[in-house]
Amino acid sequence: MDITVVLQWIIILFLFAFAIGIVAPISGVGGGVLFVPLATAFFPFSVDFIRGAGLIMALTSALSSAPYLIEKGLANVKIVSPLVVVSIITSITGGIVGLWLTNAFPSGEYYITIALGIVLFFIFVVMITSKRVEFPQVKEVDVFSKKLDLTGAWYEPSFKRVVRYKTTNLPLGLFCFGAVGFVAGMFGLGAGWANVPVLNLIMGAPIKVSVATSMTIITVNDAAASWVYMAKGAVLPLICIPSVIGITIGARIGAKLSARAKPLFVKYLVIGIMIFAAILDIFKGLKGLGVI
Amino acid sequence: MSTKELQVDPMNKVFAKVMKICTWAGLIVMIVFGLLYIIGINPYINVSAVAEYWGEPAASFWRKVKDVEINGYWFLSHPGFMDSLSMIGVCLLALAPLFSTVAIIPTSKKIYRIFLSILAAEFIFSIIRPIIL
Image (tube, rainbow over all chains, first blue to last red):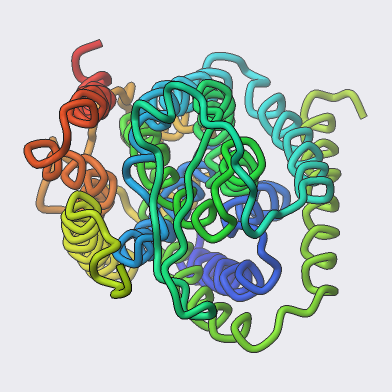
């Protein structure tokens, strides 16, 4: 391939990741969830390299914000540690299974592309139906959460006081994080879309704590899964670097814009694009299998 | 307690500090060498060769580009190339949670020490698994 054409693709990839970086914070939809299905639908790269880049993008984004959220007391390592002991295993398993499927079968790539489209529909349903509770009421704490003292506190500037919280339902939370870890590893997604509702609605963490703790969980899960992709040669700097730089710069601009306004139509527009990408992925997979 | 500082567990503070250092180091290494690679300086895999086969699944890509069955960390056996060095930056990023976890093990409470030790062991296994299995 002509080097000029290669550079054109690299620039397009950078601009694509940059645009995702801007709209992700405004819409509240994770960058990885947008990048992987859209890049699979529109770019000439194998889904292996797109998932590899998606994982590194999600990892970089989470690593950039998690330490600051931990320092503020919003993300809590006490809550993270029992959850990731389970999800790290499923996340690695997801990565292994995902890469095995694309490489062991001649049509494996198409099956993964179809599965990605189906998972996107599921994510869409979760996003549309799950509510967000600012401060969930935790009336009863299960014995494991009590024993581990899964509590915390942070200084909330809008209230000008320290807010304390406790979490519960650790066994159910462990099960959910196990399942989410598998999907994240298999498709190279960040999985904030699932982590936040589990922490907020099942375990009873306040929404700010849920978002911040989810970021920290993503750092561990995606870092572990990324070793699977690196060892299988599915992380290519040529695809990874423009994506990471693009989304990092875009996300900084997006974060500033979202602090001013979060127009609802942007969220619906992005969700609409997600659905479009899901349909395209399923179509691409079925076409590859010769079904249509 | 009324001040912001009193609320953050020292375990969390150390975790965040180590993560921040690793992230910055990883990002700088990954991006600097990655950009040098993209502009064509000393590549292990030629940029145009990558573009020729980037539509192939990973295993097939490596067979066609380098005639190898990939299972392990290719960049460690070919250091000195810009793409290999960029991958070292990615490794630093992927090591950040492990380093942060190990850093807080000695000072954490007993029950967390157990969780964090299991977590660190799982993490190390995920790194060495492709080499030993």
